[in-house]
Length: 143
Image: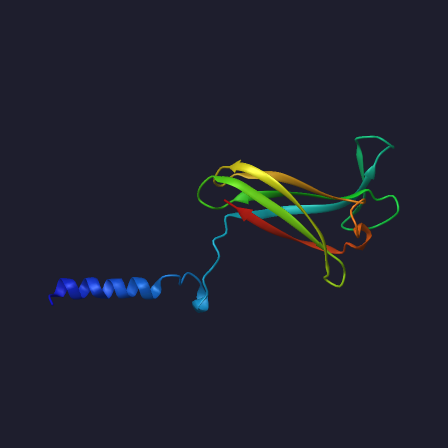
């Protein structure tokens, strides 16, 4: 076997042996395609009956008898390195014992690389367990 074949064999062994090692301690890091830059949660009600105008009652998930929705607005950024054709943002809602209550999702289409866009998600008081919401998490699926 000549030196060239030996070198090629070693390179193949190294490539196969090191593939997937992108994180520390042997863990492979997930390829993050989008990040939520910021978000706010408000408890809201209509300004007037049958009005399209909303009034903030409180910051966060503060249930009271006049609350009509929890309104989440935020900003998401494409960090994939290419245009994302579709982003699905899911807000998962939990009670104070960390029991899952409900989820709401929205989709965003054609977000160019490094660009940001805003999103809005509402959890309505007609949804079961509205009054039990304590906190939430996000899941992002990007293609």
